[in-house]
Image 1 (cartoon, rainbow, N blue to C red):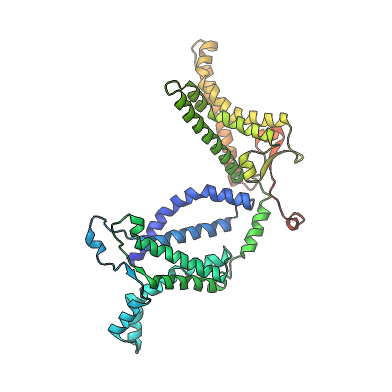
Image 2 (image 1 turned 135 degrees about the vertical axis):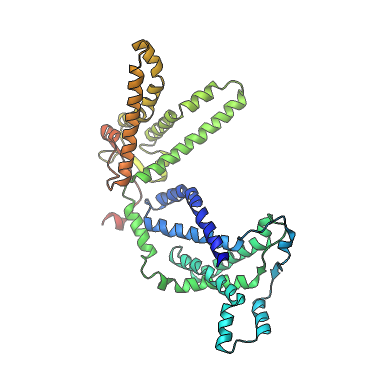
Length: 389
């Protein structure tokens, strides 16, 4: 049992890391394709990822000590004859004719290995039929392909990391893994009787696309920030190549990067009538109270207010020392007021963010949206059948 618990424990440790890496790309894909992020679809996808991770660890773990050549001598490396181990068992122990012999066969490593290789890919077939909507033939081919990938991983000594294979490329594994995927396809309707149909999940996603959630808005903002960050990195590299000993421009650019980010969003929204690259990817747009593209004045007011709350107060606090000396002759009143104002503005913003995240009214406009009379709306193309319901 320990030989199976070690890979599963490793998958439990690595899954949060892998989940964190793919969360943003997955969320962006869901918002772009479906306009929402249904919890049931997310649950299905993440359980599938965990299953694939655990199955992969089951075929590679435990890893041997690469410095000990004797650990690689026991493997035959290649077993092309199907069910050769089963034939050797029958030749050695005879056909199980009695109940005790049958019971002994079921407990033997020969049977357990075959049974494990079948059971390992049964979930794969279930996922293929239920979520990915694959046909019987596609499930058969994909199950065989997955098994072949596992066997090539073993015969190549984990892609050349080790000096020789430490496990055997076995034809039995190809047959049993493929059979397991087919069995999963066949039993999927019975196993998933109590789960909603994939079509129902998609319909729920489309209905949810009308909601402008805080997470959806944050995903679009992250895309915009990524583009600005990539542009900043490129400018920094070019500037340092042209003038490696004179970098005041680079320092100024990086210091004011948050302000440049808001200028970028404002310019994109003005040129594209309420869109930014991130908002377009998530099917969002800035609109006025009538749902129309806002005017230049309202867009400008919107981003000036955001800048004042998140950047302006910080810049004021940073430069408050000079203001303090100029107006108050060395007293700390201006400095204290500047820092306090900056903290209050930041605290109020993040308090509203947290409140929206846990509130069912996450689509309620922020204060700067109420003042500028702008808000984010969903522009996901809802089908006619959904739009008329």
